[in-house]
Length: 337
Image 1 (tube, rainbow, N blue to C red):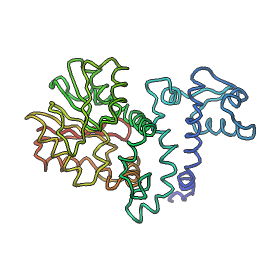
Image 2: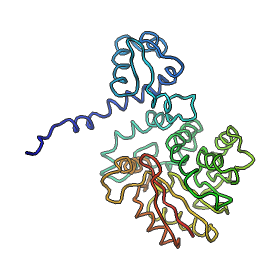
Image 3: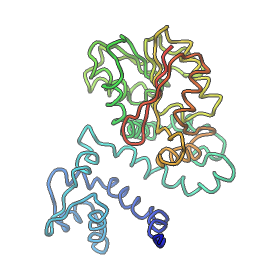
């Protein structure tokens, strides 16, 4: 006999915003950073975080039930994963993307139905007055948060790329749409023979240079200001595009890949990575939801399969392509000229 269906999964997903907002509020109040210093009892946490007596116990115990906190008798502490990834004082902190989700994306997703019906973005630029990236880059505080969020979202994949691509065969690289520069930094840290460039709009330069200096790499990494549609890309052996292609429509994707092909020397490589959707489009739920997020955030962006990307690369002239899983939902597609 077949197993009787239950509504459990429907309810879990349909009311998933309960758990999401509970975690996002905990990140906003820096609960995990507080507990990384020392386990605390409920009353101490209530006072330090400014919680109301009515909410504190349910809030903390909900985070226990969700797997983000541990409770021993009356004392709360972080789980190992929360301690590693949600403590702002650690280099492994990825809460930046959650901070952006809390302050920006959570509200924009309320307009998903409209986006599904109109095909139009639903973020700050939904009025149509200012293009999304122009609006984003015009606000220094919002830009800084966005760049930190990109580091948090990409850090694990960046570490994998830095060690698993055959960098010993190359001498120079350029990271296109570098943001804060974490991919460039991780590649340089893992491969002392390399020199590289981070390429992005001029407004990004201070954040990139600060991050590079913090990692002691200012002698090997430089910032190149430019628009990757309008300006020349750096003349290097390897070009990387991390979480870049999914921002753009099909013609723009092809244009960026074609521009990389024209820039690279024979034997040069292009590495593109995103939350690449599985070719069957049925397993990488994060990649598919990220593509819906591109509907919310961009005028024509969408995520794609490895087969899609390898096809575009072959059309541009690359003679060899392959895909490799990195970490979590992220994979890279490598093309050789």
